[in-house]
Image 1 (cartoon, rainbow, N blue to C red):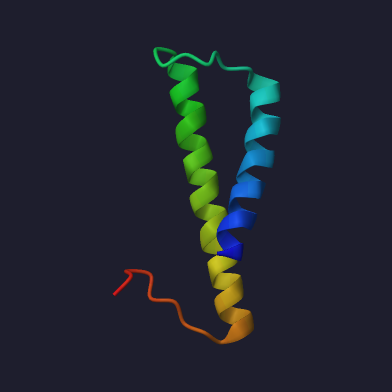
Image 2: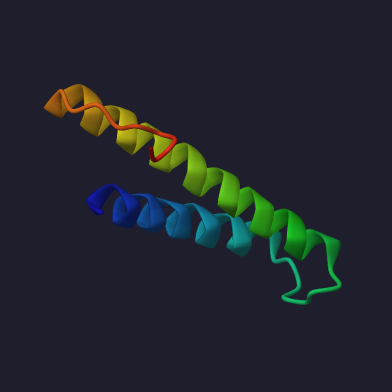
Length: 68
């Protein structure tokens, strides 16, 4: 749970900085908006994987990534 909150926080900070510099129009028909959305999903996924691996290494607990 904590790793998801940290991942979301990092993704929001990165997304906010990137949005500030690129300023894509918030419009469903804008290609730049969709690129921004997918990049934020990618950033969240990578940061979440990083925190999951970090937590797994520090605690010695093994996560089953498939959920089974």
